[in-house]
Image (cartoon, rainbow, N blue to C red; front, side):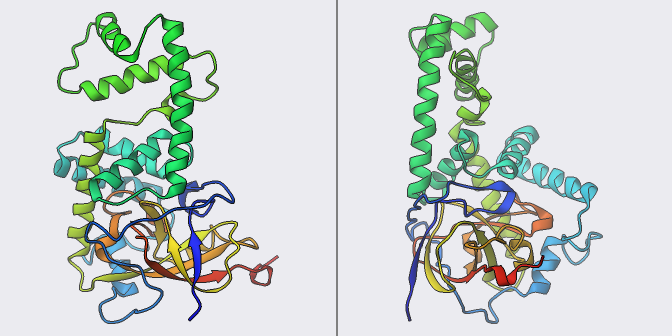
Length: 330
């Protein structure tokens, strides 16, 4: 069997605009942390059926919700608010903290936004996995920009260093940040960056949402919530799909190197919305449930897209379908 190599790191993530840069090369994820391997086949009695997945996404057999694919704003808000409350209780964080981390994933899972990249970093550290090479390079680029803005902002505000600024703003704002000092430092960094003469975008995108400790608590709570909820169903794998843009892959079987955590969908039809042009591909894989970090019902994820956030691992084997113009309808 001929196996091609798929290196993730370009515009491949279709869901919620989780796009990278065309032509960039992805990296690897070790088979560590006790996670399984994706495979291109093997759907059997241990794979959750579509009926079971429908039931799960609809909120359970006794739920009044139905048809998760139907656009229903009120339902989707209700689902996310309940998920937020569940994760706040499980993690010990506030509702607001959980809400903003869920919302950040919906906005972007990578790109050039430190808020999203920091969530990826904390997921990699908490779950014992690695960032892809593309993520590492992207993170380094954003950090270099941030450091330039901080250096100029410190000069503008008359501080010698960030430590000097941390002390200075405590006195100016007359606030003691004893229990949340790490989060306080992020607030100061945003203020310093905002005062840079060179910044052209919102300062918030160069600083994590919350401290690493806070975000790792959230990631752990989401993973445990997801495993507990999916554990109520008989089976240990699910069949999922992912759209990848601007790929030179041919249809067939390929080894896939993905990002630390990334979005897939239970619906091939939904995935076609993100891979519809010549050169785009749809990946298909059987994913161990223990590799699922979040779902639309348990944390990160869009309900009407049937989104599952997974750990792909570095030894993933996937099935590839290349999108050709013959598939298009005009």
